Amino acid sequence: LMFVSLAATPLLRQVPQFIIIGIFLYLGMSSIRGNSMFDRMWLFGIWDKTRWPDEPFVTEVSTATTHKFTGLQLACFSIIVILRYVGAGGAMPFLIAALVPVRIWIVPRFFSAEDLEVLDP
Image 1 (tube, rainbow, N blue to C red):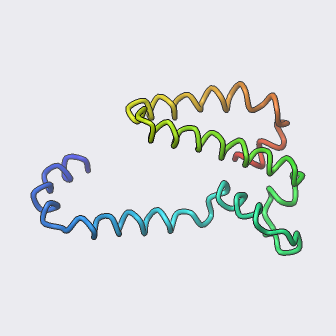
Image 2 (image 1 turned 180 degrees about the vertical axis):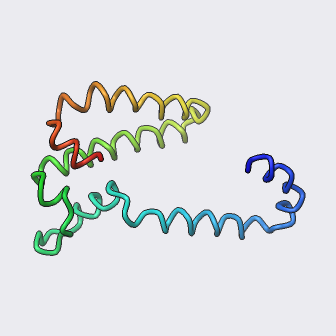
Image 3 (image 1 turned 135 degrees about the horizontal axis):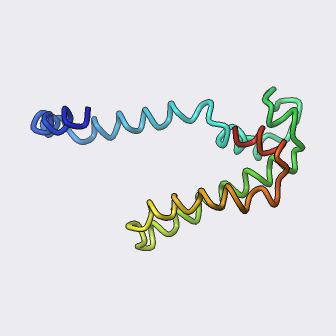
């Protein structure tokens, strides 16, 4: 498939850039629905707990633990985005790869295995 896209490069140059940007924007926005991190982020803005979705991260894990885990994910995401915009964009793949040891060795110190099974399937 990659070789096909390389062969189609002259054809893709004929497509206006705003159309390609629109396609990627649509794909990105349509993938947000159902992403557990974004679903948990919306819980920060819903004060009425009766309006919370009937999801395992709401029913099986305490609210404080869910918010703590989501906050940790947002902090890691924010650090990567900030470092990208201050000029360390070339190190971004290494920063993302560094999240694997964080998830394997550091996160289990703060959350139980049962909670992690629900929060990070």
